[in-house]
Image (tube, rainbow, N blue to C red; front, side, top):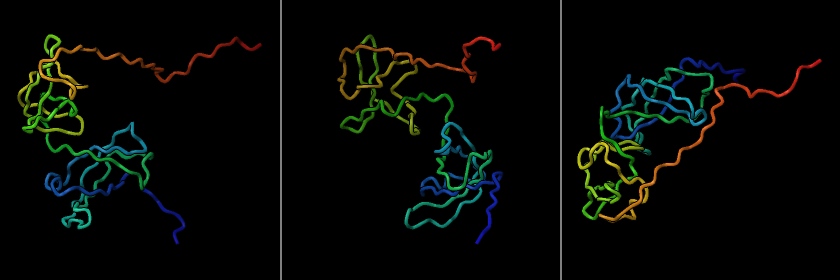
Length: 186
């Protein structure tokens, strides 16, 4: 029986697994973004230190290990982490939110573009994507206004009313305490 356990926060290891298709894209030394569910406001980094060459037959995933680069005492063993691996990157790509696309009967992706308060269908060719946005390779020009809500209810050539988003009021305290009312003690 152990009397105590010593944890070295400077060398925390993250054990994870990756799918077959991502395994070949991960290289030893690659840096990944790390977010812990318990500390969602902070982002950390980890480096791939080990790639197991044996696939887990139950999950069809390959185990990997990463060393946390910028650890913190807020992180404790057993925490759940979300890892982000950038497998492809393009500079100056035209991207749109993933949920703006509609797929027609031919399997083509389309978006609705607004011109002079009229919605026009445009077939687009897409490229790389992540969980939030997708690259548009052709069919859409930078600066064109697209429908981001309710597009599944539209038809080509229908007149629409464009609404500007309402600004959100955010109060910022800048870390200062509110001034306290009151006079001097005598």
